[in-house]
Image 1: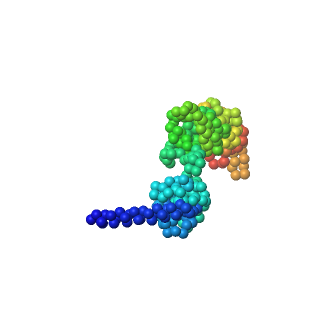
Image 2 (image 1 turned 180 degrees about the vertical axis):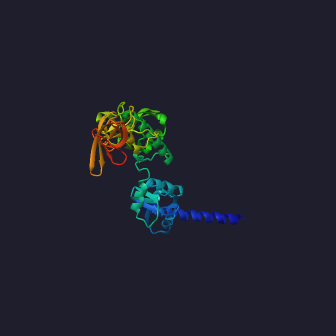
Image 3 (image 1 turned 60 degrees about the vertical axis):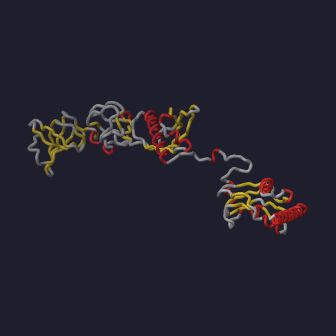
Length: 372
């Protein structure tokens, strides 16, 4: 048994001597390690052959090529190795740093990818997503806001539209329903989604239509700040209304008219109203209207050519025979209106059509005898 132990001890010593002799020989000549500048690895383990070329023909050096160094980086992450990093890893594997002679690049960048892809394109794409070798972090403008969802953007749009609409009501003195579509800066969406954070509004230009820029004064933990918001604004349905109270029978002038935005809760149909001044000028009111009351089409007409109580000339046509008489208007009417007139002196009432100022005509049929 003792002889067997001694036998194994001598074998171990002999093996150690051979190893030391090999290392000593390499120390004399040194393995030439040429470090590359970039490497694309498709496996999970980074090996020495992936990062450098070993220019030594001995079997011992060739075996170094399979030496594992570390796990490969995640996809899109650039991993940098210096000569010193590699020497430390090899020392941990039981290899003397003096056994190697380093040449080539000082630093190699390693990225996970497919070998068929050109190194440059893979490295460049990964480097754009990671921290640079100098340790500088990406610029703030490169960061996307966190925790921003479509729901947050929609809420911010509703809040900002409501705030701008209130501002336009104040500026125009109307309560119309504006169509407002703001563009929300994503980095301010969380703040703009909270109505209580908005202190006041400014900006925009008359006539308050089209692409507008508004400035919102915000309350933040750091103090007050201003956020500029672009918004597309469309005017509400505008109709013509009375600037002040107007009596029945008034001939309308431009000074009597004003634009009015119909309130959202209004029961007035815009199609029953006037949407331009020209259509109203020179027309006559059929009934009195109050301040900011829209003019209805049915309540406005041409000026009366005949007023109630006026003396009128009545022309009666019977075939080719035309007879005139005198009478009194029972009703007022504009040209082409049918009104009741009284034929004098008989005081007989007939329906007549207004043809001009204080002149009416009756077509033979129901007028009865008329005496001049």
